Length: 176
Image (cartoon, rainbow, N blue to C red; front, top):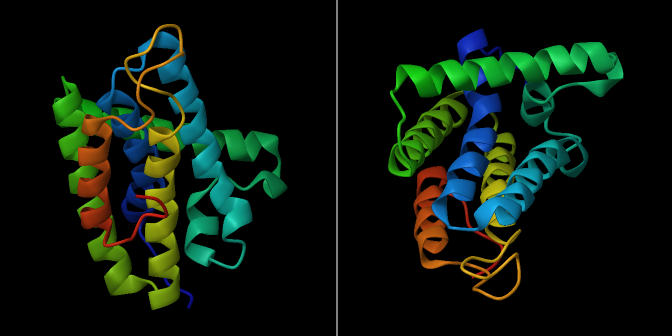
């Protein structure tokens, strides 16, 4: 399916996995080291879409294309970061709750868009990819330990947010 998306739609679709990763990283209390692990897991999970879904033109379209050269890929990534930054500022995000609400709102907007424009298989894979970002971030660091040791792997606030993301995306998580 060769669907044309507007620039604003592409920004939304590119930004949702990043927004999910940030919201999930903020959901728990992982501390400095744990939050670093979670943000790394978020970036890694987003970029994994290139390899995990090589035949999904939608996912390939919203991720930076390294084949066009590192400079071009960096430019694409910068545009996504700037769009996200502007969106967060325009929505007056000032708390973890605000960030989570915006992530859920953007998930719902992205789902409405891809359900209307993408093929059913592209839409399902996009939803699964976005949900995998939340799952990977949730499992990247334990909550409530000391210097990354001890604590619980999947905290109650993370469980709650993951359930909300799962519902907003209409996807099913790979673990319970």
